[in-house]
Amino acid sequence: MALIKDVFSDDWLDRLSRALDAPRLQQDIKRADWEELAFKQRVRRISTSLGSYVPREFDVAATELERLAPEFTGLAGIVFPDYIELYGDDWDRSLLALERLTPYSTAEFAVRRFLLSDQDRYLQQALLWSTSDDEHVRRLASEGTRPRLPWGQAIPALIADPRPVLPLLDRLLTDDSLYVRKSVANHLNDITKTHPELVIERLDQLGNNPQTDWVLRHASRTLLKQGHPDVLKAFGLVTRGTVTVDDLTVTPSLPIGGELTFTFALTTTEPQVLRIEYAIDYVKKRGMSQKVFRISERQVAGRETFTKRQSFRNLTTRVHYPGTHRVTILINGQAYATATFDVTGEE
Image (cartoon, rainbow, N blue to C red; front, side, top):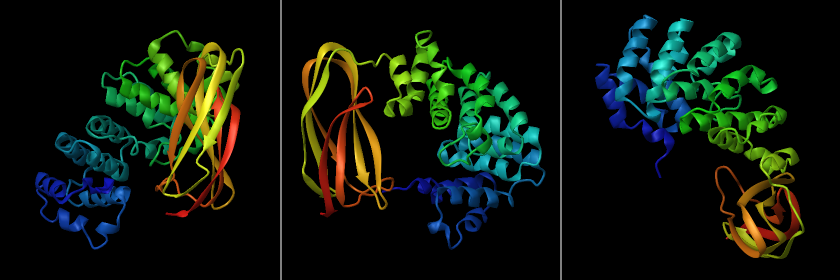
């Protein structure tokens, strides 16, 4: 199976060497430890090596990388913004370069050096980017300021107080580009983890614009999984009449690597839209950890039966341990039925 770090293939490195007229570049990059380097380590190895093959004057080097960027699009092209992060010694020229490079790959990681060094100055630039005609630059305004960007440096000041970035996000809530709106939604979802009230107070905009509605729904996904009552109410997920869950049956025992199957019946006395989820309390190395999974959010009338399956195969993001686990059926964020099951050693 190909790994993400393999985007830097011999062919790609050879093309870069030829584009720079630097026959020794690939040799400098692929030193003895190359195979052991993770993706971001390879990015930094390449951008560091570029320093020996582009002009020493930063403005000239940035211009050269801007010229080459259209030939090296996609994820691998991230090495050019990384060079700017590493060697940019002129604030304005660096941010101009990152603005020009981001459409060909992404500068969302490289800009964080500048955000961390002078937040007020950087946010003024990001606010200007939010008005750009280029959707990639508008997305950079949001993505580059996310406080908890995956793979990126955290921004402690914006985790503690995200209010300085809210004017930028509010401007992009109705952006025509889904690419931009997804970034705004993910950014707001980051904010819900420490300051949910700042997202909840924006839910009064629901119904004003379909693009805003989509952003706010996606931004509220963590709060919905947590069963936050104000958020459920904002999306019309208020239980009416009598709702019951019964006949919950689960696979009594399964090995690590096996599959859990469970079935339950849901009955409602009034037709209504319900958010139907299940939570699994996983046995961990120390204690328990719960994860919520969505089944459906739709109109339910009368009685319906649901069957779900959940893999217990080990993943890089989730390792399973033997012991007694628990599954809970959630309706509009409330627990309605619970059953336990045992997970044994690997099959």
